[in-house]
Figure 1 (tube, rainbow, N blue to C red):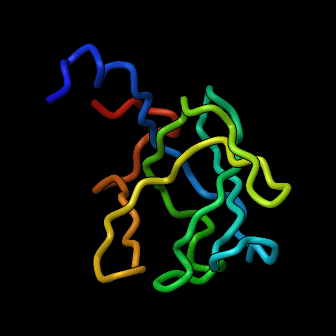
Figure 2 (figure 1 turned 45 degrees about the vertical axis):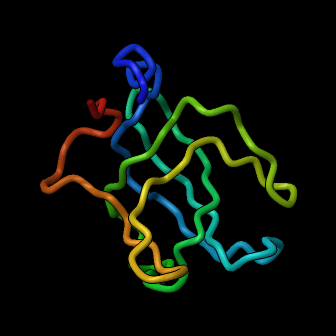
Length: 109
């Protein structure tokens, strides 16, 4: 069990995907995403969501992500946030997203 104070440390925010392209250097199939988090600015993310999504379907989609992990270098690409999803079947990841459009950068809690 974690304490409420532990949960409060996690910054989970809404963002909109501005760019999505195949991540050719990744070991596992992934996309490189550029995400707008409003006042928090733009952040990059590597996301293994290639089974259910095409890059052109991701642009303009709102997502939910953890924005306060330290940046992670993945095959020369700096991933600055963790896009959240549900493991549906094996490697299939279904993105978490707001039920309706909201302002980018809004805190989840």
